[in-house]
Amino acid sequence: MPLAMPEGKRLAISLGPDFDAHSVWMGTFRSGSQTLLSRGEFGAEVGVPRLLDTFERYGITTTWSVPTHTVQTFRPAVDAILSAGHEIAAHGVYHEYVPKLEPAEERRLLELQLEQHERLLGIRPRGYRSPALDVTDITLDLLAEYGFDWDSSLMGRDFTPYHPRMVTHLDLELGNAFGPESAVLEFPVHWYLDDFPELESFKGSPLMQSNQAVLERWKDSFDFAYERCPGEIMTFALHPQTIGRANNMVMLERFLDHVTDHDGIWFPTLSQAYDAWSDPEPSRPDGGPHPADPEGIRNV
Image (cartoon, rainbow, N blue to C red; front, side, top):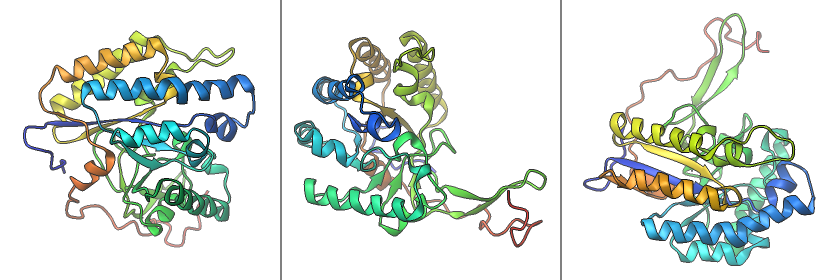
């Protein structure tokens, strides 16, 4: 089911930054290294202004996923994002690695970030992106319970929004079974549209790729979506401390030059994209127990 786009628009693109700053190093990587923290500071003090300038020049409005730790540590940068008309989505408290959380702690942190968004920014976020793009078996249920419209953490499609189903039964011999569709709409992401794993450099890490390789991958993804997936959306996860480096900004602007050479590109916030989505009639299984395992006794 395509998005109901503004007249004349063919493809939506969300260039959504994850403004992690210090929190990614402290939360996910569990480090207080001054050098790593300075990279987060670069994201706030240099990367954010560069991205805001680029977005303004290209006429882009987007969704920034921001941990509440960042809101409290780099408030002027967050205010600048809001003043430029962008959306702020939930992205954890301190970029906690969600799969390691006990259920009660996951709930507590979700409640805390909502309270901090409302108290510090005066707004309740409509959407959520999990830190490190990973969730637990209960994350989507919690998001639905607390009234979120959308999530952008999973990878079950590439350009098509969908209602994800959690895998409820794992069985190596009989196949897996799914639970019911979530009420939350998923805007799928993928590592290949994420700058951090491909362009971030770690001490001794061989993973960093060339800008040209990443640019060609992004252009190929766009070309496919533009030609074959009209009415759908490309969802990026960018990071100010990564994409904001000089060589990466040049790459991003070359990509945007390629994109804007095409007619009919829409740059919505993810909540605007959500408002343009109409759910199709149900056509998938109801997610009941595995037919060969009605009581789940073969789970692994």
